[in-house]
Amino acid sequence: MLDWVRFTLCAVLAAAGVFVIFTSILGVFRFKFVLNRMHCAAIIDTLGALFLLAALMLAAKAPAFVWKLFFLILFLWIGTPIAAHLVARLELRTDETALSHMEHPDETEENADGIL
Image 1: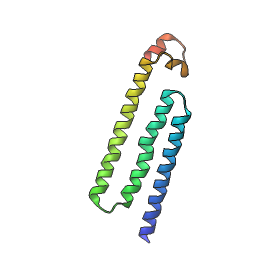
Image 2: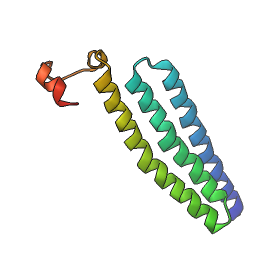
Image 3: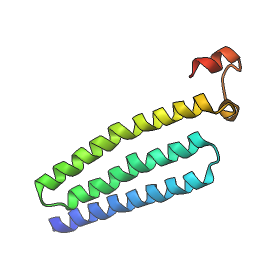
Image 4: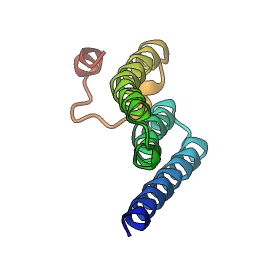
């Protein structure tokens, strides 16, 4: 009985991970602005990988393998947002037309320079 519950949870988590990954891939191809595409790509690494690796953690029987997957999730959750933030800052600093794609509460030039 317990094996069926574990199998069901693994299947649900894996299906959720595949759904998130395919939805994010669709967003990467659909959006035109770089920051929107990068947001979709970061979702693949964080949420999609979390669901898939959590399914593998439930399916694994060896504790060492579970710990390796846990540290992999931890590394992805720390590294991906930092990398996405650095790429976003690079895009805002190098693309002169990037600010025209965004909405600003105050349309002053001083405020636009303050976000960089």
